[in-house]
Amino acid sequence: MTDATPSEPARHAHSSTEPDLLADRRAKLNRLRQEFGLDPYGGRVDGLITLAAARERYDPSSDPNVAGAADSTDTADTSAADRRPVVKVAGRVVLHRDIGSLVFMTLRDATADLQIGVSKKAVDPRAFKLAKLADLGDWAVVQGPVGTTKTKEITVWAVGEGSFTIATKTLALPPEKHHGLQDPELRYRKRYVDLYANPHVLQTFLKRSRIIQRVRDFLTNPPASLGDPYVEVETPMMQLLPGGAAARPFITHHNALDLDLYLRVAPELYLKRLLVGGMPRVFEINRNFRNEGLSQRHNPEFTMLELYQAFGDYGSMMTLTERLIHTLAVEIGGSATLPFGDWQIDYSMPFRRASYHDLFQEHNGFPGSDHDRLVALAKHVGIDPQGKDHDLLLNEVWEETVEERLIQPTFVMDYPAVICPLTKTKPDRPDIAERFELFIARMEVANAYTELNDPDVQEANFRRQVAGLDPEEAVFRTIDQDFLEALRVGMPPAGGLGIGIDRLVMLLTNSRSIRDVILFPLMRPQNQQPPPAPLPDKPTQQRGTTSG
RNA sequence: GACCGGGUAGCUCAGCCGGUAGAGCAUCGGCCUUUUAAGCCGCUGGUCGAGGGUUCGAAUCCCUCCCCGGUCACCA
Image (cartoon, rainbow, N blue to C red; front, side, top):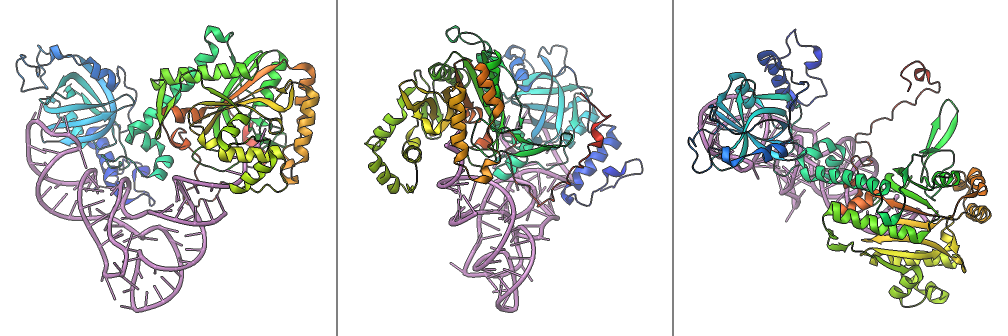
């Protein structure tokens, strides 16, 4: 093949790190520039419609291939009698069938796949040669009538000068055209390939977008029975103290203030400050960061809906939660009953409500208050009861014996107060917290409290919590005195709710792994790359450049 | 972190009781105006994840390490 001419900049020459397999693509790129005068990284194109829209434009009454119409041999017909609707479409070339003087391609965009046809007779020679040169993976633009082929496949036929062109040349070799991209590692690392090569992946993420959109609509314009709208707010992701959940935080550093900061594990304590300030109904949909293990259900950064309602309680949160999730199932999933793996999940209202203790009794055959039997069961399921408080042990056994049996949507209510430091207890039961967790398909999807607003009880809970920590953990679990001060200013009684958006999307899209609903899940670096050099302490660039 | 499975051509995968590396698709060259994963002919393409060991000889057996997936652990 020819190498770069003097007119070609050096960047078009082979890089020593580039696989030889790309040599053909490089040569073709140069050829497009030199022989065709084509910019292989072209610009703006007006007047495009989606492939799905083009398919809908098809009009059988204009189609000479439909029985009764004349001249059925030339479907790229350009005669004045042609009444077929003319469209302009763009898409990635995912199939390419060159049969001599006629080239068929299948283009793909976010809406559909659609066949296009380029006939030597119907286009200028340059456009026809470009059609023959097109590679799998190129972006193509085609203009012409929407018709069919002899086999009735709806096809956009390129007709006229410049009616087929390559808008962007790919330099990469595409995945196998039938199997798509299968290797999970490659799918997550090269999501940009996964998205186009596996259409259902793109559909999942479009659905995710619709789910989040619908949640926002629901909360900012709620059903009448739920009362006033909720206001969307944004609170700090970089926090001085990582509060609101017990997870280990990520640490970062602000240079100008020479200050260590934590990425938030939850927005809870800030949203409650807003209740104090007089915002009665607030919500936030945003990322939390927890420095813990990865699993099918855990990614270090994940998206959470948190919501607070003044003068509500966990009962109001229950009503809201089941209404919201039912609405999403029906409107986005298309049915009140949706598959998840081998299960059929029934999102009909009302969801089951059962107390923490009743569920323990139901699945274990004795009350959780029976300490001796609890200890015996703990040993039986492999939990060491040594030195554990009754309620903490109960919780471990509960998670081991009950959680995995909660397949259908179930509100688990009234947790032991000792594991709920931010929750108000029941008026007559100081040992029971007004908290629920919603379980679906063994996953904790939502978590809600009647919020604790007594500053003295809150402070006592914090102190008890910190006292039980080893020194290493205690470092980042300092008591948030400003939050206590806010409670002293006075937080109205309130209900609060958190919903794990990623898990909800998993359920509604029947996705087994959280990585299938997060576009770019965290992965280890591939090639033992050295970490980037640390930033200089003095932020010289930050001044005088672009400032907001 | 532990255990199990995997890493072979750009992609999807065989080969794994040791004997110099295979298929399909893609690429490249040729033919073809109604193809649907088009077809036909021909040609390319691999430090078999990395390093070490055993052996006359290692993709294959052994050791160490890296990456991915799964299970478990961690996650008030």
